[in-house]
Picture 1 (spheres, rainbow, N blue to C red):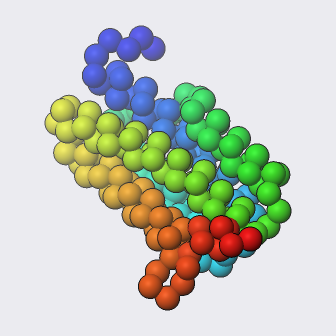
Picture 2: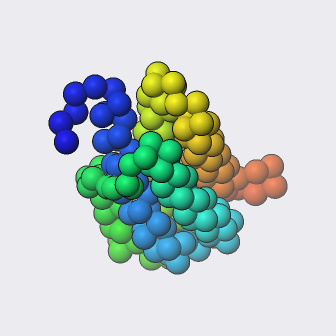
Length: 169
């Protein structure tokens, strides 16, 4: 399909992020298994459930648009997932590996935040009120996941955080 207007671009971007979310649901279990920190495992496990809900939300958006859900290959996400796989292979299970996992996971979150922010803007421009709200829900989840990963890396008042643990080894 030729991209000739904002609506076409919106649909193409939806197809791309749907593929990205599918890649994430396949890649997150590997990160969960590779993590040493229980807090990180819990955060990634919770986000896996959210991501599965995000796929359902994207399918609902396609339904509201009266379009069959389709994907286009998200090469950016493939690269980000490949980086995650490399971290798992390069580091043994440790606080340092957890810090590296957080770094890679946050890159994924930032990609998603950028994508969903743009999609929300497109939906608003197209007057798609219900779809805008659905995209905002996902954008809020992605932002919260990013903040949670930062909190785990930095620690709270009572713990040093994964970054400090990784630095001490």
